[in-house]
Length: 255
Image 1 (cartoon, rainbow, N blue to C red):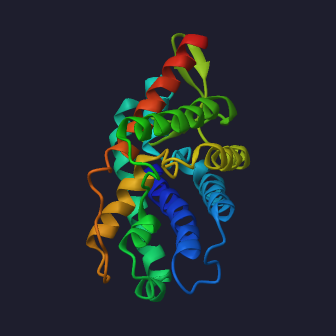
Image 2: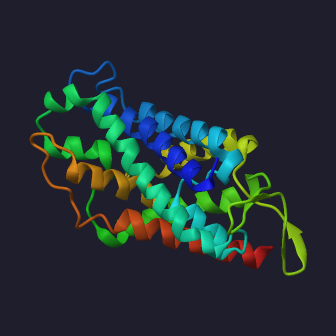
């Protein structure tokens, strides 16, 4: 499978699980209505697990532009593949959100509040303070990417899409990627971040997780949609990217 296709599918799987569990908890007349934050964090963790386990062998299963740019900044991913990966991930996020909308279409009709509907697609802060919200996303993504540097199994995607077990960087053979063996610890890492740091902003920690579904929210046809909250949308994009670059910097310093 092409690594670009794998990133599309993997990110769509992540959003299908993650957006789906949010829909199950917040939309009216669902089986899981009001079942709470623990259910939401577990749903996202399982989405991460399934996406990484199934797609890791083909693309490294970044499924997150922050992970991709963090690996590239650390010299562990080809910069030529960064933009294609990020576009694929964003498109995958869009597709996953459309699938959630199709699955819960009747429940969107039964839910009046526009902000509740938007929550299925994208994040929003509990207290809107942009500097604090940005910092929260930086911290959450920093620990995500920094931990991934040490728990991921070898595998490197070259510019021609070939999966390599090692590459030569600064005269040394190194390997990197989120292969299938990394799926469980990465899923648990996302669970822990959600439980510990998800309260202020909903822990986007992934630009594609927020931007792709937010675009889907903007274009999908349903009543009482409410605002897309584009004024906040830069936080879950640039906060995670900043956190990833900081994690890469620390990794380089300590390596």
